[in-house]
Each structure stands twice: as C-alpha cells, then as structure tokens.
Amino acid sequence: MNVEEHVVEFRDIVKQQIQEEMQSVDGELNEVMKTIQVTKEHADEQRDKENKRNNMILYNVPESDLSTDDRSTADMDFCLQLFNTCLHAGVSDEDIVKVFRLGKNR
Image (cartoon, rainbow, N blue to C red):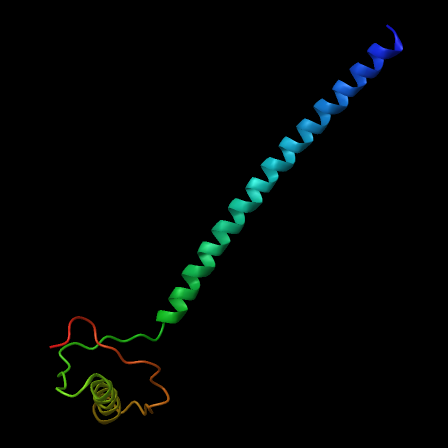
C-alpha cells in the first residue's frame, strides 16, 4: 500500500465519520424541534385556558334598543345589577373586563 492510497483511505474514513455525526446531530435537532413545538402548543393551550378562566355566559338577557356603545353600557349595567342585587357578589365595574353579546343584533 502506498502513501497516496493511505491518504485516500483516511480521507474516506474521516468523511464517513463526519457524515455519521451530522446525521446524529440532525436527528437530535429534529427531536429538540418536536419538543419545542409540543411545549409551545401546551403553553398556548394553558394561556387560552387562563384567558377563559373567568368567563361567564348569561342567557336570555334583555337586549337594549340603544346604539351599539350605549347597548354595551346597558349590558354592563345589567351584569352589575345581577351580580350585586340578585347574587350579592360585591362586583364593581372594574372587576368586569369586557362584556359582549353572542349572535346577531336585533
């Protein structure tokens, strides 16, 4: 075996080793990316649950004939009256973050 064949053989061995290492790193990187995606989805789900934690849906609430802005104020007033007069919950207008109606307006 001459020196040139030995160099070519060594180069092929090193090339093979590098390819195997790159494949290993690629597999590990894909695994990390999958874990990150699953973690992100879980965090999004938890954030969604946290945002909905204090939601409340009321049915058959009378709809006001006022304009859209005034209607929202009337809905807020109705909720405050319901919580404080009927349920004695001690809710203030600062406690209610947002009031909106589901479905179509009349």
